[in-house]
Length: 162
Image (tube, rainbow, N blue to C red):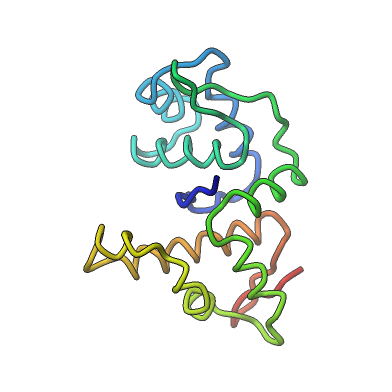
């Protein structure tokens, strides 16, 4: 399973560990988990906390059960995060391939153009006037996570693979 929601990359990976610790070990409702993320990590809104909760699932640091969300005991090491991110975040593998194949830095817009056809058709209808803007932002967020995870480097004129 791959996940589409990716929050903007934080300044350091410690935020991921903080967010994981905020998710309870005993399953709890989405509302309660989001409240814990807001209170313990300082996310600015319920939407931001919900995105992080989903993202923690993508990173195999939390799971959803019939009783609610709970923390998994996987350690958020850089190697674990890199592996889970590339496998479970939608378009991550394709974007890495774009960077691998590039002979010069790739801008976020160029990267988006190269994976645009992967955006599911239903996403076009979900936000007919904004879907491209939303997906350009998502691609930019994935690229910034690549930088944080030491998979890519941000240069003045774009991104290159590390």
